[in-house]
Length: 351
Image (cartoon, rainbow, N blue to C red; front, top):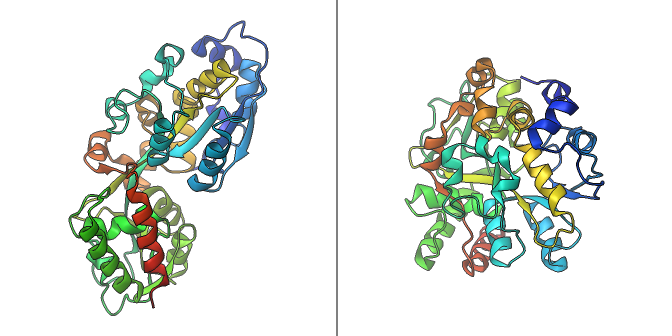
């Protein structure tokens, strides 16, 4: 279900009252970096109108892209950034993320209790979760002889399915499929475990149609693929086009992925940065993400406002916050990230 974003933006007067912005200070040139399409198309313009700020949105394609820019500039030139949890953790460890003053974020009270207890940042001291979910199997229920229920169904597919499967190309998620299948931590740093994961994924490569982070759901819709590794929200894009597409978290489990909002310590517009993050946490504004990008958001007030028909159409949208927290959060693996990158390079180079 798609909603008109304009119906989700509170009136100017109501919004200012909600955010405590009556008589706000002079406009500030706020720079926000986010992925394309990850918030309402008019979100920044509406924020500017409501607060008197002059924020601008710049886009990044990947976590790695924005991280390179932030590390090179030590955060200068940016105020609010959206990144995934391991990258948020790195920015914190590097001293680039602002220590958050919750008094300036009253709407943080809208978060689920579970979203305030994420293991990399208990109490949301430097990060505010924006979207979260699982990684699992997305498949054509009308084309497969049996519904998949294990990561091994993807790693060692039946003969009829071989050549009609895809896996995610990004390092952490590609490795996670085999890590979970083997019963390992998705944050393992054990060399022997990484070696076994590499062996499994090199074998699986021989059965793949492609590594694919962006068009796997379209391949399912067309029938070119029948079983793919998928983020739950992206599987929903396929479900929107074909009701025979289904999503399942395998019996061995999933990672928990979290995309977060950070205020940069180097920001010269801290008050406006806080106002923007707080504005995004407004139930109506945050609900836009759930209704339009079909990802679960960790905002209890926003999720309670969803049309039940949307959850009926996309069952993974109904997963509880407690269930999500039962999966292992992807976290920074420190120096082992070099081993992760090397392992993935060797997998992709293998014949």
